[in-house]
Amino acid sequence: MEKRGKLIIFSAPSGSGKSTIIQSLLNRDLNLSFSISATSRAPRGTEKNGVEYYFISPEEFRRRIANGEFLEYEEVYAGKYYGTLKSEVERILDSGRNVIFDVDVVGGLNIKKYYGNQALALFIQPPSIEELKRRLNHRATDAPEVIASRIAKAEYELSFAPKFDRIIVNDILEKAQEEAYQTIRQFLDKP
Image (cartoon, rainbow, N blue to C red):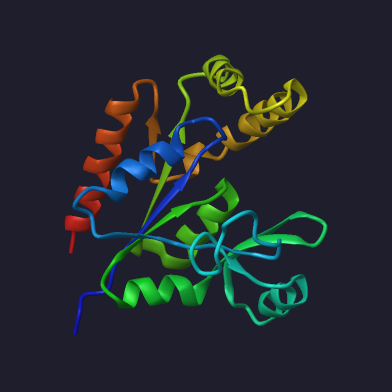
């Protein structure tokens, strides 16, 4: 019988460097598998079902919500759902691999509550709101009103940081990546 995996949850405001840190960890010796989310939106470009997302209809999504099949979900826009299927997480855990999540703060805390000590919840924090604003402007992918909205959302999300197991301040990327790695390594090494 293979040993069951554990769960690593990452949450952060947009522009904190969470995705970059997660990408660096997937290439290390942590036996990680990324949790593929479900969405009710249509595939974009070359996206494939079961690779980037599990694409399901809004009706099917609502049916699965009613059946309690999601660990967490959110209706981001009317009829546009995103969520984490329990079956996806269990499939990875049963294979003996560790599951890594990139989810919003509420979703992250819901997963932590469901799995308790089997999960490690990490919050990636920008050094300051001013630095976050600078990073989002530097990306040059969003209009000023979108950036303003992301900053307002970030201020709200930062209020959840103390509820996470560990806060990692991403002021120097390499340092934050190493701190995340060491924190996860210690968590995985615990019986």
